[in-house]
Image 1 (spheres, rainbow, N blue to C red):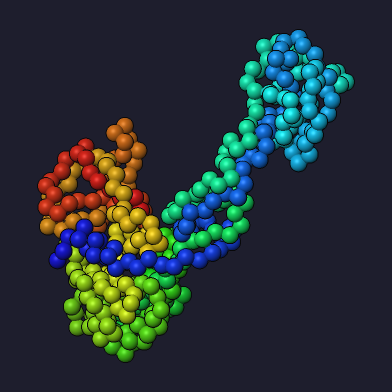
Image 2: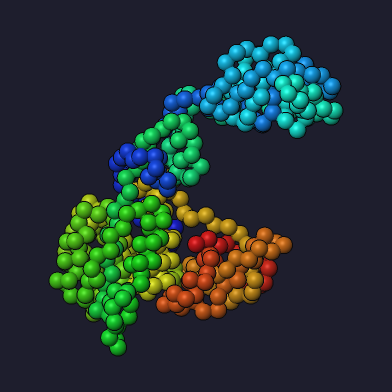
Length: 394
C-alpha cells in the first residue's frame, strides 16, 4: 500500500491538459478561463454621478447659496452644454456629469422652487462623482486560469466580452460493475441493490467542471466489462466503480490490463478506500474506485476533484484542510489514514468537529448528513475532547 499523499501525487501526474474552446458569455459561468482576457472598453466610460441630485460647482454649493437649474442629465441622455457659474443641472445616478461641474449636491440637501435651488444647512460635503475608468480601463486584464464565478461573468460582460476562451470540460466515463446492481427506478431482485455510486459521483464531478457519461452497468463477466470499456473509449478519464479487489468476481483490473491499462498503483493506506487503483489506458487516465458507496464518494473528493482541477489547468493541490477541535474523545487510529464522516459546528474555538458514531463505508445516510471529513493521520494516538483536528469540507 502507498500513502494518500503519494497516491494523490501519482493520480495528478496522470492529468493531461485539455484544449481550449470558445463559448458565449452566457454559458461561461463555472467554466475555467483558458487565456487572459483584455477589456475592450473603459468603465465607467465617462465621469458619472453616484447619487440623485444636482451637478454643481462645489465652491458655489455652500449653505444658503442659490443656483439656477438649467437642464437635466439622465442615464443614456447626457446634458451636452458646459455648466457655468451660478448654474446647476438635475442629475440621476449613473448619468454623465456635465463639463464644468465637479460635484453632486444630493437632492436631500436642496430646496427647489421652480428652476431655483437653495442649498440647505449641514449639507453632505461628499462630491459623489465617479471618475471615468474608476472601475477598470480599456486594456485591463482578467487573468487565467480561474473558475469563472457569477461576479467574473458580470465583469466580463461589463468589459464588452461576448465570447470567452475556456478549457474544454474533461469527459469522464463512469463504469459501475456488479451482478447485484440495478438502475434507479428498476425493481431489484431479492439479492440486488440500487446502483448509487455513479449518480453521486456524476453530481460531484459535474460540480467540479467535468462532463460525465454513465455507462451501462457492467456485469461480472469479462465480456460485459469489455463492452463497457469499448463504450468508454474517447473519454479523458475512465472511472470504474467496484470490482477492483482480488475476489473471484473482481475482474476490472485484469480486463483493463487486457485493454492496455498501464497500472501505476493498487491499494492505498486509507479508510475508507483501500482498494483503489490508477493508471493510463489507451491515452486516457483511469482510476478504479472501491465499490462501497461511501468509499467511492470519499475517494472522489480526495483524489478526483484535484485531478479534474489539474485537467482544467487549475492549480493541482490537495483539498483544503481546516483545523477545528474535537467534540468528543477518540481512540487511537490504525496504520491507515482515516477520513471520518463528521459535522463541523461553529463554536467559541472556531469549529468543533463531531464525528458520527457509525463509520461503516456502506452508510450513505451518514455521508448525506455529514458536511465534512475529519482526518485522522495513520497511527494517530488517542485524542481528548478539545484537541486540534483537521477536517475537509464536502
